[in-house]
Length: 491
Ligand code: NDP
Ligand code: HEM
Image (cartoon, rainbow, N blue to C red; front, side):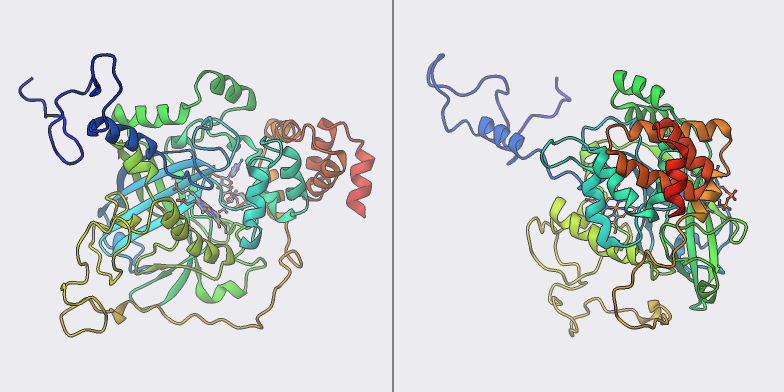
């Protein structure tokens, strides 16, 4: 007994009784002055915060990033400065469409986010387990997500909405093909790759810019579930990922990924046959080989899931000297969207929460607001504006990036004109063996059940344009005549 701490109110006063409310007589009503009861009920009413608008269901852990190869000729980021250098990280994996209580083993893209606590601020890589995305213009993101979430009338997920949108947006074909391939239901987070997906930039010590893509390759090997296996798992365990990830780290069996980059010279961006800033495209490995960078390891479970994983806030706006953005218009929208979401979901000072706080220190002139529980961050309490004469924090011109050449007339350019949406899904489809193709056709056909035939035909024609075998394979599973698809594809 003696070594147990004494239970207190939030004001620190000892609580004499945590079993019985304070009542007027044994059978009587509760007294208003039972502050402990009131505090407990009031706190319970405030236990929920808004879930993430997308990627609500997630699993995460702490870990380490270790540099294994010298890439300092491309980036001056301190995180890459020396072979053997270790940086603390935290990672969160997620599904996209399901709510906070969704089952883990559902077919969906998986989020793959890593926060590197570097000595020059936090670098966040909020990517997916796929190298591409469904859309290439952020103006379509709210529409796309509406098709993935619940129908406003039925409150059910709507395959009609999904396939209607996808069939009207052929730029989605590449990602749709990955989603319905074997890799659409990874067995657990350890058994999938992660990709930064966007093109980012590196800047080296000579202030030269390179374009870069990030790839985390699983060292546990790829493992996936078929639809039938996933149904069986979800029927028995809705939390299979949480159980697997937490369990493996708890047992000391730490999952690892090897980080690679693809590098493109700044001036090469005009020379590729595809737009290298288009998020629906990869850079073929044959043209841009993978260059090893380091090892990501997850080795510590969170002590408190809510504080450390639910309140985690990743944002593509969090870059550090030597790593930066690119002209990818999707990336630019994300640079706005995430911090905006965090201010709403977690509050103005979300970056002061321990899990989000940089370990390298913060000096800003932001002031006051809800939950401003920390003092001056400017370097001197009398310096609460800038410029000042009191030794407050100052800008650091040595971190300026080289100027980025941009040109062109401001206009709304039709991104569906002159963009080849078929070649890269074709390259992927041709990697699949006969059994993988067969499963792809069945997975798509199962997901299309109940969708109006006009929408199905419109989508199957896109598959046909990727590869006739692809179109005819799905058509066969949907009971469509081959001529129907061939004729429409020829239109
Ligand atoms: P490569 O033959 O060099 O590489 C094929 C890539 O496909 C590998 O990265 C492999 O990942 C990945 N892959 C295999 N099966 C699947 C699947 N079901 N879903 C998603 N990815 C899968 O190919 P190229 O670079 O010439 O590209 C060909 C096609 O491969 C692309 O059109 C694209 O669809 C896909 N791809 C390309 C990537 C790239 O960055 N170039 C990245 C990922 C996919 P792993 O090595 O881990 O097995
Ligand atoms: C989460 C917006 C595209 C990966 C989120 C959140 C928002 C958002 C608002 C919730 C953030 C939070 O509350 O913490 C957008 C917009 C996009 C877009 C506007 C397109 C313009 C993408 C793409 C990727 C991606 C292309 C992957 C390459 C993720 C991940 C999360 C997430 C992994 C969860 C992060 C976590 O674990 O906390 N997105 N997103 N998103 N998004 Fe996006």
